[in-house]
Image (cartoon, rainbow, N blue to C red; front, side):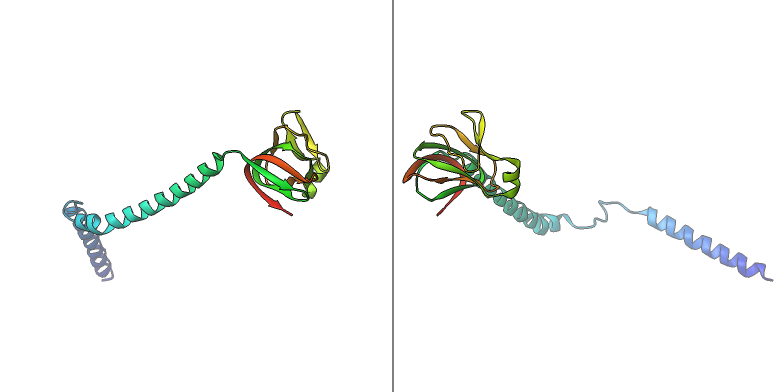
Length: 167
């Protein structure tokens, strides 16, 4: 007597599973039943995506043009007065054309390491408090608290790169 309900239940369960398998596999085709219509993609999604892409491209183009302007910068001659300090914001190149300037290193780590301004003409490093030679190609490799202070009345400095003048 107990076998009949178990057998009936098993048969009905098998029949339901078989029905699901046959109906799921039966007539599915992406052409017959698309998830979204082509007109929705063309009329709604296409313009939205294109607008987002164009906005991103324009944003990146502006960034790149700003970078190219900064990196392709030309040399500028500055008349720096006594007591003014030129500090590099990022890599900066300089030539002291006339006048006197003294190296300034404000970072404790750079002071401890003996870092300063690279004198590529002499192949040396001008450390904190030392006079920068005139007509030497000087490089401040990064904006980490390195620069120089003018000690003469004025100094003409040929400079390229990002810098701030204070004082």
